[in-house]
Image 1 (tube, rainbow, N blue to C red):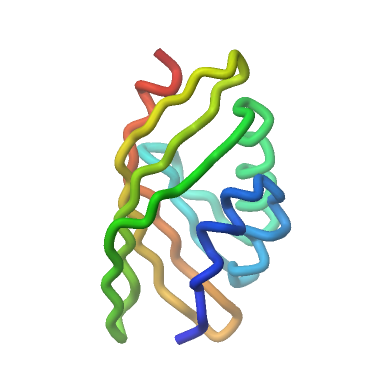
Image 2 (tube, rainbow, N blue to C red):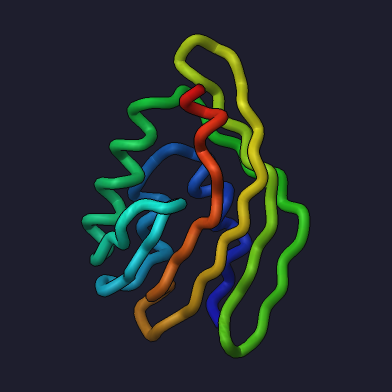
Amino acid sequence: MADRSQLFADIDSMEPARFSQHLAEDVTMRFGSGEPIHGRQAAHDAWAGFCEGVDGVSHERLRRWESDAGTVAEANVTYTKQDGSTVTVPVVTIYTEGDGGIDDYRIFIDLAPLFA
C-alpha cells in the first residue's frame, strides 16, 4: 500500500493537482450523496470546482484503519466560507488502492451545514 500520509494535507492545500496525484487514472470518486465521478481528470475538475466556492479546507485527523481491503479515515473537516465564517463537519473517507494509485475514493459527509 502506498504512503498516503500527505493525502489530507494535499487536499487542504486546495491545489487540485496535489490531490489528484494520489488518484489512479481510472479512479471512481463519490463525494457525499453526489453521483460517482469517473477518472482522475474528472475528480481533479470536481475538486477544483468545489474549491472555488470556499476559502479554505482543513482536516483534523481522528482515526485511521488500514487493511489489505482498503483504508478508512475519520476526521473533522473545517471549511472556511467566502464570508470568513467556518463550518466543521465530521467526515469518513474510504479508499482502495490500485496499481496506479487510489482507484476507489468515497467521502461520506453531510455538507448541508456548509450551505445553510
